[in-house]
Image 1 (tube, one colour):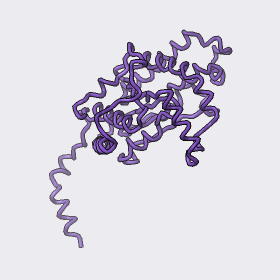
Image 2 (cartoon, rainbow, N blue to C red; image 1 turned 90 degrees about the horizontal axis):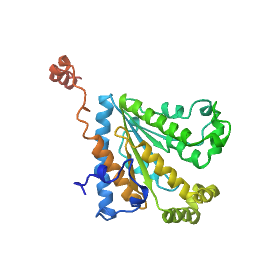
Image 3 (cartoon, helix red, strand yellow; image 1 turned 45 degrees about the vertical axis):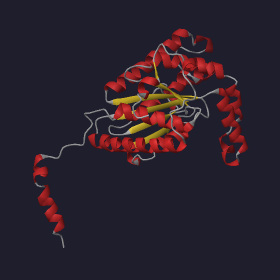
Image 4 (tube, rainbow, N blue to C red; image 1 turned 180 degrees about the vertical axis):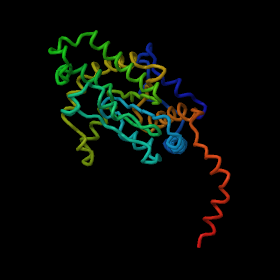
Length: 294
């Protein structure tokens, strides 16, 4: 398990095809083993986050996308459990507010980017603007774009331009110190059905269910086609996509944590700041002062 390079196994390139990626894999660990491995990875990531915060020169952006019930919320809870709360902020992007619609579609994501030394986790991301809006192009009309007054005007050039804008956005923030990792939680349609049924069968989970979930489920193939193009068009060296098997939540969490660990803990320049020479030279004196207090 520890010798596997998950960054290589699950990287999604411009030539990749979603149908070639599994929705379930066996890492050779039982549930107890998966829990132990996740604990190990959480501790390493938490130690890195502490160093990143002290270093204060990089931010880390983690993007999570997937069909409804793919497990984004629980993954965030479990993977980042050991982080110091001052160093990680989670943003769950819903339907744009009236204020957000007065700006371009990337504005609300710009203002949610991580500060230097911190992690930002996007639970649903700027990619909703080439996914949901592509399946439901009528939503574009709410953006009040100057050159789009009819749905029919959202042609292939429109979407090609939007992919380019997203690549430019990610390149810009990467060149200014934001490390970007994007994860698509690859869920099968059968497993989504099982999870929706559990929402209906368990009273404590009823609140998560919406009749709209069933309407969106009917558009499964359209969404998969949109994901295919979005991932192919925007997986770059600065902002790679990883296609994570999500039918088993425990496995998905370990894989995401592994890729974060493989990618981030190798950043050799992330170090604790050195003490000023004058302070370092007098550490023993400072200890003596404190120890001799009455």
